[in-house]
Image (cartoon, rainbow, N blue to C red; front, top):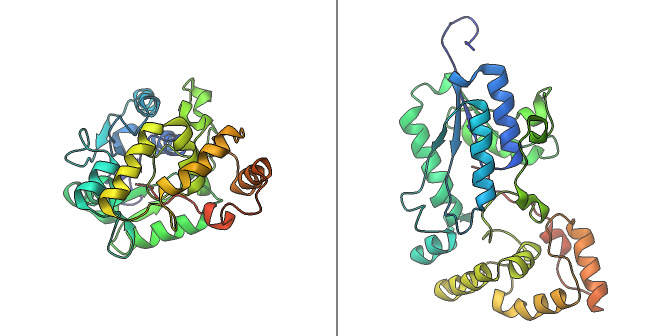
Length: 280
């Protein structure tokens, strides 16, 4: 695909997270602009916290497209997960509140890669897997990258797409979607109580490591409680049969938990409903 009026090829960079939405975007961009002009830019994450089925999925989609995955990784990605990163820095956040793990594992390598590989910003478009239900995220990303001279696009929100699931091309979405909403790190340091209840139930090893991180840093992941303090509540919820899933909306998940435990209040459900912001 060439830029109108110039004959010079554009570079189309897909922020290729390993999730289903970014895979759909990758397919749409390659179908429209060709594989020779498309970059699938991924940040590989330690296999302890990035499920093997996510790694399977992103490789199968890349193979289908005939495009090699381009990696922009933290130098120690294969030996350090998000807990190791924050414990080494002795902080959960940087600057004005950006999650340190996101900054070190994704944002910093992303910006370094762009600086080294995009000589002409005007001829580059960066794509994200946000859909029409996420206008605030699109506006924020457009503003951040636009201020640096980059163009962005969101095919799931702005294009007439050619498919709605990778099942249509014979590739099963990651199995992690059975319990999790995103293909992000298991044990997200920006997530709320519902996520951490699922971690407690499905990945108790990560729950223990997160408690260790809170002790090392002397700060809490959740807004107003330590994981150690909320663990007894999670144990009661598990015993009461509260299903560990992020797929149930918070305004249904927590009322069910309250009913099962016969409690008036457990959490601020509006806070729990905040979206994840880990997108690069």
